[in-house]
Amino acid sequence: MSLYEEKILPHIIDRACSMGQVMNLRSQVVPQARGTVLEVGMGSGLNLEFYDADKVDLVYGLEPSRGMRKKARPNLAKSKVKVEWLDLPGEQIPLADNSVDTVLLTFTLCTIPDWQAALEQMKRVLRPDGELLFLEHGQSPHQSTRTWQNRITPAWKKVAGGCHLNRPITELIQQAGFRIMELENLYVPKAPKIAGYIYKGRARHI
Ligand SMILES: C[S@@+](CC[C@H](N)C(=O)[O-])C[C@H]1O[C@@H](n2cnc3c(N)ncnc32)[C@H](O)[C@@H]1O
Image 1 (cartoon, helix red, strand yellow):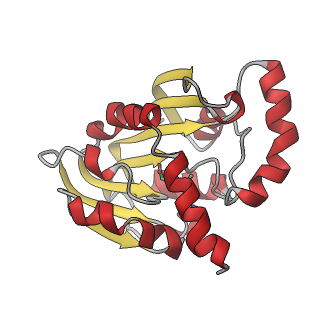
Image 2: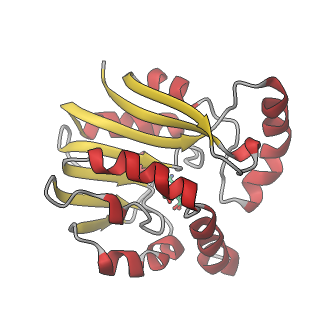
């Protein structure tokens, strides 16, 4: 792992993902988690403060990057919920079928190389009555923004840890066999439009 991936990128991601407006969106999504939770791409643990400890038994924090897991230490130390790390990618979730009540996905579907395999794994481990909670950025519905997203993504991916600006988040979730139960789209105020088109919602098994 290079110095950039180990130290610099985790710092940049942590700063970019902890902007006030983004934290506000997290506070609307994360408290809905319940029971046994799988957080895919836990990153620096920015969601931990928003879990409702009365509703959550255990959080599996799946995070393949050692640098991100290190960056999460201060947030883990403050966490009121119990967290168990899974140091593998989302394409290889090492949990039993139907074993989690909630899958939480925040700003991660943009980055996972094989998004289809990862979503299939999430569906496999999610109980039939469980929920996938998502808060992601992705493809804008506005043509001019979308054109720039497509232009910039090849270079952006190289410096932003594999992040795609242009993934059509709800289509991907639906293609993997989930039913969208609730969806809100918005631009993060004051954020660059190419990176700030948000998909926030809940999905279940079809
Ligand atoms: C932009 S960060 C978001 C982190 C965190 N979810 C948040 O909301 O702050 C994307 C995260 O996805 C992780 N990631 C990269 N490839 C992954 C994969 N194949 N499976 C799961 N997570 C992955 C990265 O290491 C990084 O921590």
